Structures are given as structure tokens and as C-alpha cells.
Length: 253
Length: 253
DNA sequence: AAGAAGTTTTCCACTTCATGGAAAAGTACG
DNA sequence: CGTACTTTTCCATGAAGTGGAAAACTTCTT
Image (cartoon, rainbow over all chains, first blue to last red; front, side, top):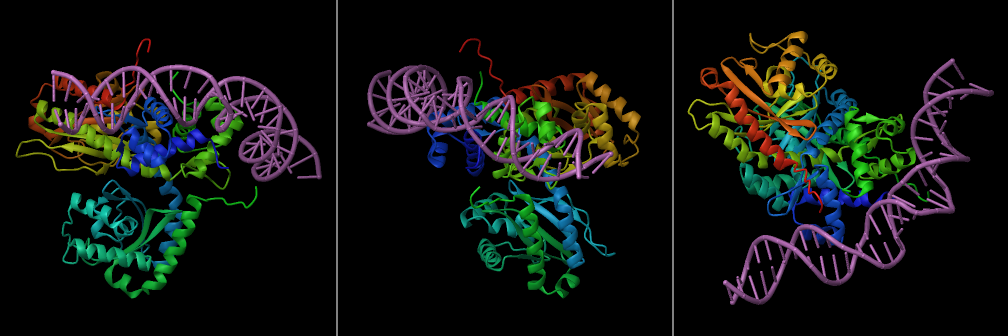
């Protein structure tokens, strides 16, 4: 049906490796992917020779440096494609629109289109922040199971950025379940006082791969109808997702 | 020889796509890689179905979003592996050591080990800066042909950060050819007054994939023997490179 | 220190699966 | 509307990947 098996399997191995935190042994990979040992080993050797995977001293395998380069180029591409969709969000809301992804434990702002207003958000493309105090962060965390979220916030802590920042594990998990129910996330001055944001997810079939948001002065954001804004943004984000990964489903061939 | 052909070829396609700026048509890929049309098409379909490649409206292909995720995880891994080497650099120089890569048009600081001194550099992991005003940036640019460098600085401009910043195309190209000759790069307060850096390349066989540097107060950096420091850092960077991509060459098997 | 239990790695006969040439379909250009 | 180019599909052929099981290592146990 789809494609070249060995390539598909190699990608399975790579993705499984990523899911396991970037590091795993052959048997772990075998049990997760269901592929036979020999096959995985051969695949890994191929990836190893190309630098896409690396072997640690304890003979386990980990994701390799070659992916960093490709990932960087791809990220730039995504930022370019997002531009027109972000522009639509600006048009809809009048506020600055952002695209962000979760990279490791950090939120990275990948692209932005500025609001035409005089008072508007700073350019923050490239900026890295912790997820807990942003709307885009909550969107991306909400896609993860609670135990992963807890693991992440235990690694990073939940530094208080403002009086409104959520700094409590319980409160965060509750907030995330609200996000899951609503389909959008808010940041009401949790990262910076006076700045409010509303973020929506970008789905890639199964997963949430990115988040898009609009942000601006508290009064202006609060003046908008949240549900309506969320609906509008979600529509745009879904269109973008569709362009990103157009899972073609032709009935018979 | 090495590994699974279809996987190797898929990686060739992906890498070629990246070299062409993240976007290309099948025939361009065919002429670059030497692979037959049918094969490339099949490979691309496989990658497409998985989101590693994306098809634009004009039927050309581009790198896809799935790479961003993998790249992010891999980047975190690299940062972890670099830690001990950065620590050695700190030990050697007494100054804060950094690992940086070129991501799109920006330098990203991926990892850092702080100097034990009281007066030392800020933590700047995750920070993005333009290449022209940093030592790591010059190292990474120096690996590129002049026309690519010019294209990049025409896109980004060369904003003056301090009185010492190089803001002239000619001067930059000269500086880069000096870097190529010396094997290390300097930043003498070009990004921030009073802060000097010395950077060395991390080679992956052919390419420079990253740069490592030490940075600190001008007086302390200038007090060190540059050539000797460069030699020491280069040794450490080479060891790191070797761990990153240990091209195994066993004579007979 | 020696054995046990768990890895990872190598090997090889089998046949599935990828191959690639060339023709068909689709697009852009004049 | 026809020409030139690119992308996509097709299919007989055999090269190339497969995967079970055994060998070589490592690490944990007693």
C-alpha cells in the first residue's frame, strides 16, 4: 500500500527512538516496533553509518547529529509555510500571531506575523521559554499524558514569571484537562503581566505537532469573544495542518 | 558494503533536498543523486506518507514537519553528549564554554558549561543570534562557499552590535578566509563590548556541523596564548566529533 | 570468581520486495 | 491548440532485504 518497507521501518526505528527520549537498546526497540532483532540491527547500522544514529559506550543507540541539520532546515520551511495562515490569524484578531513547537523541554517560537496595531507584541521568533507559563506551551503539554507532563515540569521546575503564573502541579494538570476539553488554551498574564494569549493546536493526524496563538494587550484580547476567536483560529490551524500533512485517502486506487 | 540500500537512498534524497534549500523537483533530485526517476518518486511517496517530506502546490517536494520533531530530540541529545567536552574546555581555559549550530540563518546556542569564576558569561542556551557578530558564527560560515555567505548576510543584514562589529561584506569574507587559514575564529567584542571569544569547528567528516567556543571578559581571554588555546580547543572538539560520528574503518571484518 | 541471564551481533538460505526502463498522464509554455 | 517538459504509473526481473537461530559479548547473581 504505502511505500518502501525498509524506509518505513527505518523511520519507525527513528521515531521509536525519539519517543523513548532519544536513546534505546535493540531489544527495547524490538519489543516496541515488533520488528525482528536482525532487521533492527541492520537498519541501525545503516543509520549509524550516516550519522542519523549514534552508538553509546554501553552499545545502546541514540539519535544522531545528522538529524539536527535536517531538522533545522525543515523548521525554517515550516515557518515559511505558516506565514499566510498566521497572517489570516492577524486579520481575524487584529493581534500578533505566533507559531511555536516543543523542542526538548522548551517552547520555541518558530514564526510570527505582527499585528498592524501600534501597541503590539515584540518579535520573538527564536525565543525559548518554558511551557508552563504560555498558552502555546499548555497546548503542547495537553497532548501528552499526565505522567510525561509531570516528568517535564519536575525537570524544568515551574518558575513564577508573574503573580498569575501557575506554579503548582495539581493546578497545571487541571488547567491542561480544561485545555483538552475546550480545544484551546489561554495565558492571562502568566508569562508577562498585561499580555494575554489564546492558542490552538496544529494536529498532524494523531499528534499535536505545533501550536498557533495570538497575543496582545490584556484589554484588547479580553474584549474579543473567546469561543468565537478560538473557533476561528482552530479553523485556520486545521487548514495549515492539512497543508502540512495531507494524508491522501483515495478509496480504491 | 554498509547498509540497506533503500534507506541509504532515502537519506540521500532527504539530504539533497536539504542542500537545495529544502525544496526541489524530482528531476532536479534525479540529476543530483543520479538515481532513476521511478525510484526517487517511490522513495518520496514513502517519506510523504510519513510527513518527512511535503508536496507543494506546484508538485515539487520539500522537507516536512516530521523532521522538526526528530531534529529537536536529536539536538537535545547532542547537547548532553557535548557536556563533558565543554567541561574540558572550561578546565583548559577557565572560561565558559559553548556549543552552537547554524539553524536556518541563525546561530543557536545548544549547550553550555559555565566557568567557575565569579565574573562569567550569562547562560545563553537556546539563544539565537546572527552569525556575523560571533566567533561560532564565523566558524560555521567559514565552511560555506562565499556565495552562500553573501546570500545569507543579504537576507539577514549585518546589524551593528558594537563599534567592533563587522558590518561590511568585503571585510566579512576576508575575516572568513582568515578563519579558514587559522582553523579558529575570534570575536573581539563584536557582539558585546568587553566580551571576547575564541571558537573552533566540530567536523563531521566533510562538513562543519557545529562550533565550540570559550568566552569571557576581554582582559582574561586576551591574556591567554591564542594559538595554544586554539590548539587545545581543537583537540577537544575533534575528540567530540569523533564520538559524534565514529566512522568505523575495520580493515577486513 | 564462575555461572546465569540478558544483551547485541553475525550468518545465510529463502523469496519477498524494491528496482528502473519506458510508456502514460498531467502541466506549463508559446 | 500543439509542443516540450515534468511527474506518475506500470510490471517482469532478480538483486537485495529478511528474519530465525546461533555465536559473541556484557552485566548481573550467587
